[in-house]
Length: 485
Ligand SMILES: Cc1cc2nc3c(=O)[nH]c(=O)nc-3n(C[C@H](O)[C@H](O)[C@H](O)COP(=O)(O)OP(=O)(O)OC[C@H]3O[C@@H](n4cnc5c(N)ncnc54)[C@H](O)[C@@H]3O)c2cc1C
Image 1 (tube, rainbow, N blue to C red):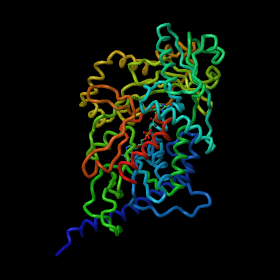
Image 2 (image 1 turned 120 degrees about the horizontal axis):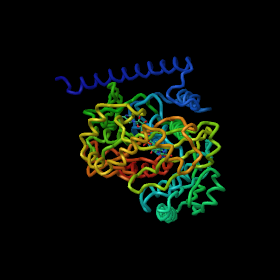
Image 3 (image 1 turned 90 degrees about the horizontal axis):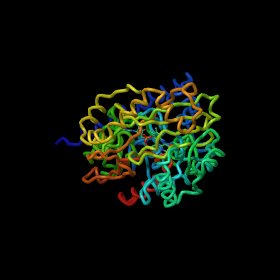
Image 4 (image 1 turned 135 degrees about the horizontal axis):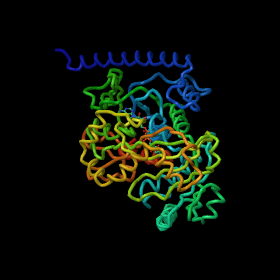
């Protein structure tokens, strides 16, 4: 009698060989690129660091272990949240095996590499919410981590500035909220004090948060990756997860039956086997949830944020972060002035609905992303409630003069001749089917064979970069409790 498992085992052996060949080819491609001096997708300042990460070897340690295709836990998504979580898990459980699966050839390519770079202090968030708790903890952990690793940051502070009389009650309410959230060193300051701190900024009153800082989050993400690999974790880039299912039988090398019963497949048909999965897939978190048989709700709506940059000779006008009093109807913080670690100053970002989840240009379009969005009733409810503000944002995105008008409320000296168009980022914002933007971080799993082995990070918008180390601790605890690690 022919064993029913035999063809499946042969198939899998073939896939493993294909996987090895693909890895070798990728390595050769990487070697060629390194030889040609290509900086990959990193900005010019990060190119050398990314190349170092690709070629990374732990100093003084033996060569890394052979790539394994079975792991105790696979973490999907090589942004700050996935990397911090993978790092935390391997540090807590050095005897277990962990993989980090990332669809791009580099890490931190999306939100984690396209953001304002602000270490938020925790002012805005509803007291008692995960955002409030994890941002305050996360900011402290972020500074401590950067100190330990020698990652440069600047604690340059932030002013939230009221420019209209009607904004003052909201500013005072923000101050109270910040105090409730235990934000350090907050105080309300007068117009005169605003000018002492930011000589070019005008305002009636401001909330001063000296604890706020800036950092290059891509640098932080690569450092998390280095820690993860040094502790024995495996990073598989160019691995786009397209399918997860229960294995029909164990992989050929397993001697312990169904020890790694979940098969995670990528777009090339390569497989890894694992016991548990954590997804931290940002703009695709709803799709990953759906793939695993868990709920597609809440859906992700991509909001693009375009930045302008001050011309270098005008950067002297901004010392620290300058933010508006946020509009309580929206989860975004409003167009702000943000100094960067390289000495430049970014202005923005705005918030316009994007027609492509990873579309960084005004006219980027994906039929699938667009189709998914327009067929979702939640989006129509959101649009109908916010039509005029949405059109205004679109208008400002197209016409620089309209954006400059906004900025002049804070720094009247800024003119259209002082600015250039800058980069963009796309925010992964969860939306429920009633058209409500989901405000807090959301983590959930599912039921059934696979669902009960998965933890999904469903909504991790700003300030998840600041909070990433605190989110990671929470995820690790949740993984330990759910999966009995
Ligand atoms: C414009 C902008 C400004 C912001 N400013 C700040 C700020 O100043 N301070 C702050 O704290 N936060 C800020 N944020 C928020 C912060 O950047 C994000 O909350 C954080 O980076 C989220 O990290 P993440 O790992 O969840 O997502 P991401 O960084 O998007 O990572 C998700 C990863 O999953 C991968 N992935 C997706 N699908 C798959 C798949 N099928 N298989 C394998 N891999 C997959 C993606 O390629 C990606 O690398 C900002 C965000 C934006 C967009």
